[in-house]
Image (cartoon, rainbow, N blue to C red; front, side):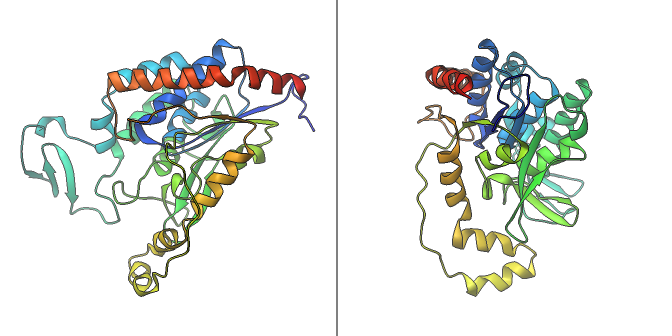
Length: 307
């Protein structure tokens, strides 16, 4: 059954996680814009939440392309202090740096050595420039996925301050410190839902386009018995991560969401990984997204016209 949208089906975009490979999602957006295909809902996880949140705020695909090609992402994501980039080891105000990269902070607690404060500030300034500091002010309805590291529960963020929600969705456990929100300790949404097709459906999408950055096949596996260390994890308030390691619930959901997408776009990025930042790599990944999207465009257009 179609939603009432001036005689056309509502289109949702599910943006998967994958670090630097998020540039490929920008390539897909370029093709959709050139084809005149309007996106009505967006759901993102990890870097997909960054791309989706900025697009929902009003940034065009061209603007996002420029951002991926020019932004110093390594410095941004790692909170690197440029003034200390030539210092092998330096401690300032309780923070220990190695060549400018923060590796230990005696002022804060929690899993993860980097605060993510810099990227939060940059995202806040970017969405503020479009007049969209909160979910409620976005041009396109948007949801981002995070995970509660204490309980191994998926948390879909849909209201409040946007930059903090995006930071939570990309807080890779062990690298970034979790974001505490509403008594939850939130980390990277890819832990539980790295391709949120189901979230798009819940928002009301008739057609869901999934952009999957995962390059290797994820197969279900047998559960592991980690009860011997679960008590220790609970003591530190991170029991959820032990449950995740034991059961990998994300694999089942990922495979189900991949199958349930109406249009599945899978950019070919065999020799690139989540740390492959930089202008040259970004250009290659954006082009991979363009190529994959163009291959699926005829099917997408047929699907839209058949609804």
